[in-house]
Length: 413
Image (cartoon, rainbow, N blue to C red):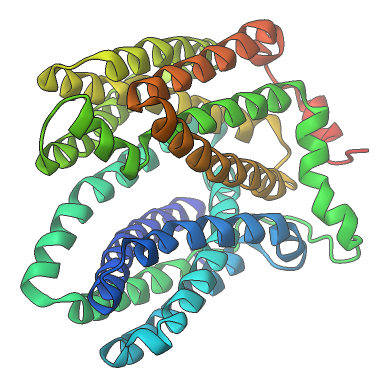
């Protein structure tokens, strides 16, 4: 039986291999669809189906969390993704327009499993790490995620050109196999009571009830909705228009902006990791300061016509965003009893996926009707509302969770 420290390493490395495989899988799928159809519409179905499946899966996740241990959920969901990808590897050489629906079905199932794995992973972390090290651990995981994003997309593009999509699918399958093996070795250290006798309706609404009845979580959730709506302005389609119409540059600058954004997130993650003890004492203030900073940065980015300044702003955007994400994750982990943390994360994920799906449509419509600059101003206004929510509820946001409050969250009304 492995201890908590070893189990955390297995979780950490398993997630890194899974994230790397996820990026390469998306690159391959988009390439396969493009080669088969040549249609942007068919390609745009990939993020739509991903988000829709995650939304449904996140809503149903509490039913799975009630029946299975968090470690088991991680292992079996990753195993399922591995099997589905193996199926995709076998059918990829024979894909044509009439059976393209098979790829879309596999995309839905893979995303559906991800919707169960994500809350399980986030809820498992506090069971493997001491409370005093949560900020540092969340920073470390955030850095790992950004490193994977930073290297996977360019490497995926290079390999796609050199090997072709079908061969990279097999590499992705290998990464998923390694990830599954790491998930298998996570020890049974959570020791959480399973609520198999709880009614399905109570299981589905439990996470939502805890969020609504906990002032800190309720405040964060309102901020999540507003800021996720605002972040819809950063989708690829709108950034592509921004580069063309606002900066008057070619497609390569779209890649530059994405690269500087991820680089900013990476450097900010390292900075937060280094000064995690400072952030630990100022979680609420960090969220307040971050929301205020995002108003200014989004306005600067959306109104500039200077390409190099846009790159600089894209880079510094990562600092308040990363600080906010780490602070929010830590507040949630410290505000909810470990028994119900996975259900709270599944409810939160459903909120975010729903808000982002709506935001993509709204931001696309605003861009078409009023221009890309107005879209960024609209996003800045949403960040302003988020800041006002934090300011109005500052007392609850800054409050330290007591042991009594954690115990009360075991029995939401």
